[in-house]
Length: 429
Ligand SMILES: *Cc1c(COP(=O)(O)O)cnc(C)c1O
Image (cartoon, rainbow, N blue to C red; front, top):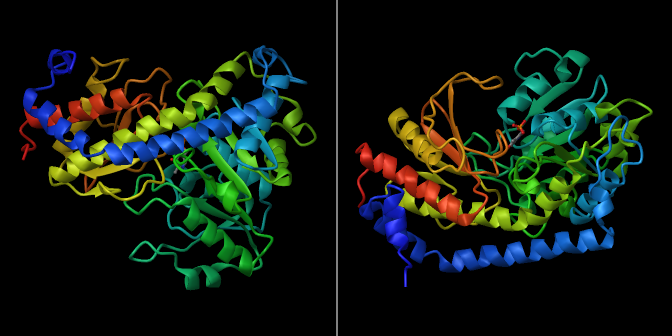
């Protein structure tokens, strides 16, 4: 029985040809989806266990205001995060306004003038270039006398161990490892590979702080970077761990000393984690974290579905349709600005919010070229919700991610195919 599903899609303006094309591909993904469900089940239990062990109670959902002294909900949530990540401590705050801010705090709290940062995995995310001062920027770490070195990945995506060894010196204080590819076409790093890299670096310099930018990677695997030696792990709550419910926030988990150093920078020296009212959003932060494993599973299914469709349509996709996944981002190289614009229109048209608006490319703060973004999200800018971004520059790759449910992710991807099909920018073969 299909309960009139096909008619439902037709009513939402998906042509039969698009419906059939996508249905055929979905049928072949059963085993992969089952594997994703098993990871989600494991992670669901991991979160549940942490919440039970921390005695999470409805009193933790009460609002605090002002200084926020003794905000039990906040302190317990930080304990829950620390448990899930098997870390000593956590800093999980609405005052961390976004991922870039959380990273800025983790870096500036732990670095002092004369220290050097090393990225052994190539160029960091665009906004981080401004933070570090790779791109000249007011208030950057470079202005405070903190220097930066970078070692690129080798042609085949492997670590350049020789180059990394040569780059580490007596001033190297922290290495930053970006798990996800971000706006690049390099492979995303598995947690296991991150572990190998950390082991190598610690073998050369045991006291170097290994920080992982975990954005888009949380709950994709059953282990996290803190399980393989990361001293700090940082991310955004409007991505995976917020489960779509967190309205704002970032997190930093890891060694207590380093987390405390970050807290002294976020609030003030001497105050640290003791202040920071949560204004009544604790329940959303807890509930979002609770839902995050299944939300991430839905987003992953969407990414794999899209990879297989666009691969069959003849476009390069990263990751490809069959390889293992380490984040929720899917890159599709559509090879023309018309196609990336049509793709984004489809994602927008499929949204529960603002489905009637038409996205257009524009100049965004922190990004070098014009960017087109599609998002019809309940939380503004949330990228665990179905969203797509594309810098308007060759090779015209669109990066998309999210979907609070698999069914929505699926519909969004079908709608992207529909728009490309309508504008005769693809052939369904
Ligand atoms: C999201 C993200 C960041 C931080 O970006 P914000 O938009 O400030 O949250 C940094 N690095 C990577 C790889 C990311 O995915």
